Length: 390
Image 1 (cartoon, rainbow, N blue to C red):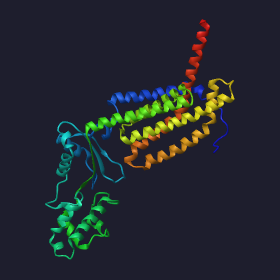
Image 2 (tube, rainbow, N blue to C red; image 1 turned 120 degrees about the vertical axis):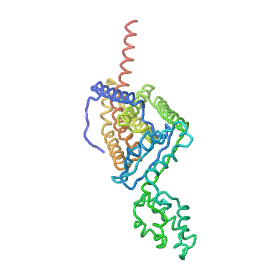
Image 3 (cartoon, helix red, strand yellow; image 1 turned 90 degrees about the vertical axis):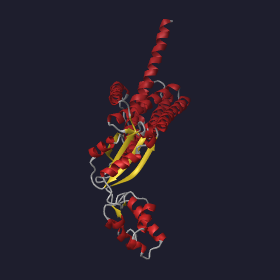
Image 4 (cartoon, rainbow, N blue to C red; image 1 turned 135 degrees about the horizontal axis):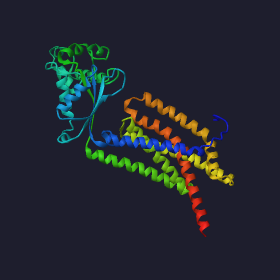
């Protein structure tokens, strides 16, 4: 696809400006890391307990934080989990410290929420009850005992209620018994529910617990995976081209990863396993973009032997510019849509790709190519100096 005609832009002539921009971005990321004491690691890498809680009404974040810290829990993160304008869902991240390592802090957190939102008499909390507990409570109801419903029918009714509760549109929290009408629950069971249960003001939507040892192992494995990918690509490019091409491409990819991590620090985003997956995707994407340019350099080198390397690099970048803009532009649109519409669960992954696609395309032109040019000029200068001495 031809986006525009042949271009003749002097990319290499502006290399100092863009290298200065890269230095500025790297410095900003480094300063942010120093001021914040390092990257903000997610539960996957640092260990801890992550709990997603949905509330019937807008929760009082500070009140909940004070209650949790009053129980000796180290609250690393307590923030809205944006899955819709009225989701009323919080993400609570507890650091593991002291005896909390043994208990994970899960029960303390649940007990604290129970104190803030107390039970209503001796009735069962419908929003946090399991199928078995709900079925057992319903069987105690005098009206149901006198009905024609069998043991298995009550069990199935409890399962139907829990399934309805946990799926959209209720998504874990029933705020009105009337919402169960039409869910396929027998009328005697619907009539018995208000007497045996109450609608709790919160529901535990998910709990993840990762020990500190597992977190450390995952950190090391993530580092090894990234280094192994870079090492393999270095060997491949050195074999296919020359070793300096491989070095230039790997330095450009290192640049991309460091700038992306700097943006994570600047925007205070967590590094999770999905982010590592995005970084590895970025490594492959950026490397592929660089290889396309280097491959064109190799072809032009055979066809135009009289051209200097700077002019050769400029010509090669211009010749591949339409392809670069098309592929990078379409990829950017896709990951931007994922970032905007993909929800909070995919936010870190998509954020890494949004930044990575832009930086990866930029580095293929303004980092990898200037490194190659600098090396060839330095080698020529050394050869000239050596000849002069002789």
